[in-house]
Amino acid sequence: MRLNPEKCTFGIKAGKFLGFYLTERGIEANPDKCDAIIQMETPSSKEWDDHDTQQIHLTFCPTRSSI
Image 1 (cartoon, rainbow, N blue to C red):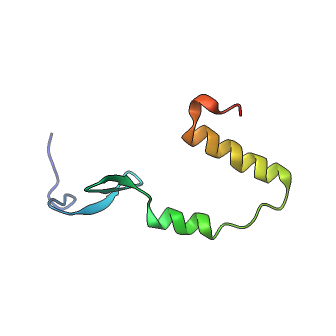
Image 2 (cartoon, rainbow, N blue to C red; image 1 turned 180 degrees about the vertical axis):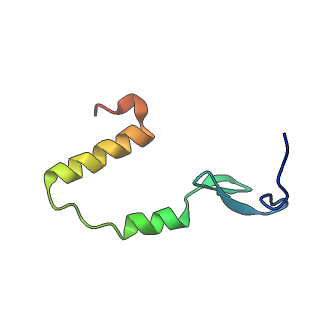
């Protein structure tokens, strides 16, 4: 494996990696994604609310996606 020194950073306390925010304590909430969720509009219909709920279940509870 070859590493490109221009793309590598070493010795940092925290950073983004593959869309996740990694720190010394492990994976934490990405502030950018949290802001995007906070700024989301309220669902305008029950169908959209159900859709969002299903997406959350598929992403975070794959074994319970039929709930």
